[in-house]
Image (cartoon, rainbow, N blue to C red):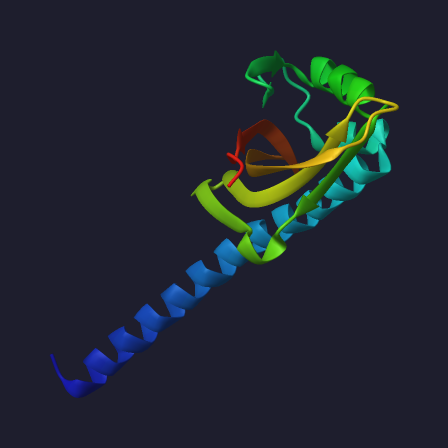
Length: 154
């Protein structure tokens, strides 16, 4: 193989790597934007906005307080109950990671602090490692699962 052929192969390889990198960036950017909308909906107690971000499927799964909640409607009902009290979400965005699991599936990880309390009670901060699976449905990314892991107090 001569020098010109090796150079052409090297340039082709770099171009391919560049295309892969830009293809991977787009889903991450889209999911990050949708996650920001999820945080805004949670903090505004906007059940309708939250509902547009959840996958409308009986297979949607949210684990909360050690119990599974299956389906978007059940999750929205639970959010509605939680929204009656103190419910706010503060993600540590510097630690946010979005990992592609497939062409239409990503996992989002971010440490968060929740302020949670029933109506009329003082909220205490609670730290969680929030994991979400997002799936692309047409042109939109939807949350297929929410799996918060509590961080023990230090």
